[in-house]
Amino acid sequence: MEARQTGPRLRVLLGEAIALGPGKSRLLGEIDKTGSISAAARAMEMSYRRAWLLVAEMNSAFRSPLVISGAGGRQGGGAVVTDFGRRVLAKYLAMEAKATRALSADMAAFEKYLKRPVSG
Image 1 (cartoon, rainbow, N blue to C red):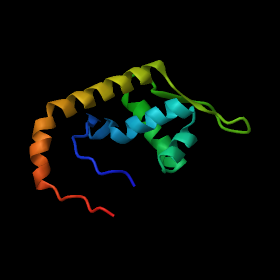
Image 2: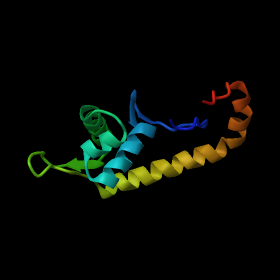
Image 3: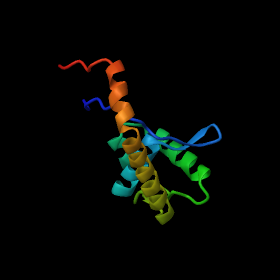
């Protein structure tokens, strides 16, 4: 089980839709690492269908595709995070780090309102 973390989480909205947020950015990074939507989904313990839908949502939210996937089959299709996708991910991660730094004092003060994690 992961350690409980507190902190802000950045979500970039396009209308009502989340163009990019913590889960989608992690999925994008996993696809870039593994070269596969299905392997990325397994690493994140989500269904392939859910991962594929998230990729489709990301691709439709941006001016250019973030991920390009090949047709599946015997050889497997694979997936590639585009150069544009890597730039988008890098900018998102930089913005998230900046927000975390900017809010660190406020988060430290806010944590007193939260319950302590149960140790097991």
